[in-house]
Length: 89
Image (cartoon, rainbow, N blue to C red; front, side):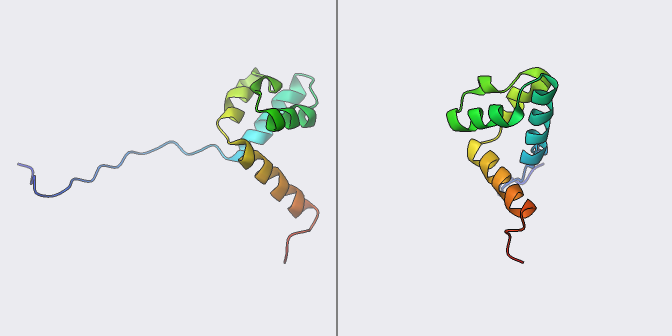
């Protein structure tokens, strides 16, 4: 019989979140394969929030919509800063 005087702990395993880098890479590749300019399309999406800038090919549109737009900008800016050695050492 269970001890009803104690709080029971229940843990649900969650799926690992898809990283922003992986999402951007997947979306970039899908846009390239469909013949779009990935930079222009991603900028259009980030600026407007309109998901139709992103192709649905390879589930790219659904993937990018799972990430907040500010997270996309943050990831791209951090990558740019590291690439250009602006980061403090």
